Amino acid sequence: MNSLLCTEALVYSAGQRTLIDKVSLRLEPGEMVALIGPNGAGKSTLLRLLTGFLPPTAGRCLLDGQPLAAWPAQTLSRRRAVMRQQAQLGFDWPVEDVIAMGRAPWEADPNPALVRELMQLTGCVTLAGRSWQQLSGGEQQRVQLARTLAQLWRDGQPEGYLFLDEPTSALDLYHQQHLLRLLQGLTRRAPLHVCMVLHDLNLAALWADRLLLLHEGQLVSQGSPETVLQAPVITRWYGADVQVGQHPSSSAPQVFLTR
Ligand SMILES: Nc1ncnc2c1ncn2[C@@H]1O[C@H](COP(=O)(O)OP(=O)(O)OP(=O)(O)O)[C@@H](O)[C@H]1O
Ligand SMILES: [Mg+2]
Image: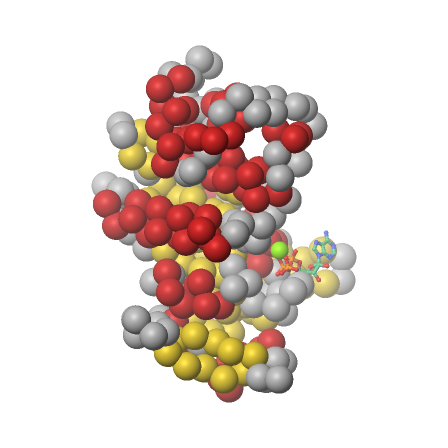
């Protein structure tokens, strides 16, 4: 089935402030999108709207033609998963149980073999048996990735919409590469859409099919990495002085700060 998540002139206001300002976009399975923009641009707020955790002030957010608010909670949980910027858990569970928590929309008693498979996939095998509170920030991020994939897992692959808010912020080089290769591979072979907030423009350029640049709640630029990551565009919206070159082994643009 062809699926589509789209917004039409989406607006979100808090008090006097318009945090999201008439954003219209389309997200489809098979694609990896990076949501970029300066601090406070509204990226996390947009993610909350796209996942149904915030109701729009105006405009619409539709999954397969139906407003998110019209979806029964359990059905929606089977269709989209979210990894937040800061994952706080109020309890100290073993890693396996945190990952198994992702299965809640599907089953009360998840198959341990599936949890092991997801740990393998996400580089969490060395964390087996450890307790959540004792994990490092990067280790917690890897476990959260496994939990979100568990939530979308269906017949041997993830299906639906995966939203990740700065999923690489605490990861070392190896795990950044591992996560992005994994997610790109999954969007190529499974009916999965990945929409991730990234501050690292060079990672976004290497792995995202499309970039969405948000500034003060408005979608000010979108398209391929080559279209969006141009020095004047970045300087205009981030205020940073940059030069844009090319990745040595791919055609992807790479952004360098100037001293
Ligand atoms: N409930 C709220 N009331 C008022 N302002 C809010 C509220 N929630 C968020 N904001 C403001 O809205 C703006 C956008 O916040 P948001 O967290 O979406 O930014 P962001 O693009 O994710 O930033 P960062 O890159 O720092 O994570 C910020 O200026 C924030 O202070
Ligand atoms: Mg944010």
